[in-house]
Image 1 (tube, helix red, strand yellow):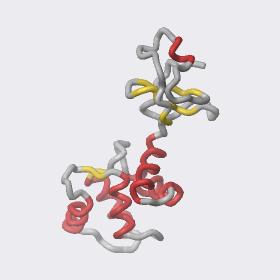
Image 2: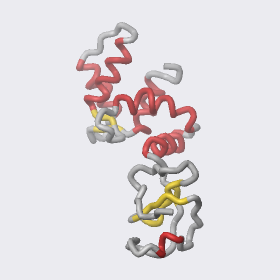
Image 3: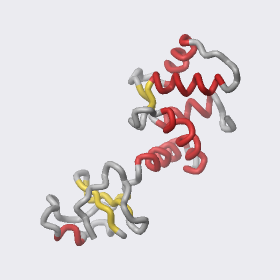
Length: 157
């Protein structure tokens, strides 16, 4: 097994039989299993800078992580959020930042209302965005987006 590839950024492994496990904040690797608190064969690899025990927290691919995080926060199942993530949020997250900025949100909103033959003014976009991004950070994460979507648009839309 090759433990020299750090999978922290993607959470993806080249084999379905492996998962990405965190050693610590500096390293993660794809392995078939991981036992927390123990050193693993990868520690014998001279290229690994930090030998020692592993935390074994599973590192999920970004999309799975965002859905799981939103589900936990909103007390919903990941299944309830997967289609919203892929069909709405991810499709309009044009820069793949895992957040949605005003311009990306504007595109989503205009497309959503265009399906209903309703014109969306810039004033309305700004008012909705102000509610969606009360911290004025300039971007909303998937959990914030879900809260807005379910309270404004609803489950069946």
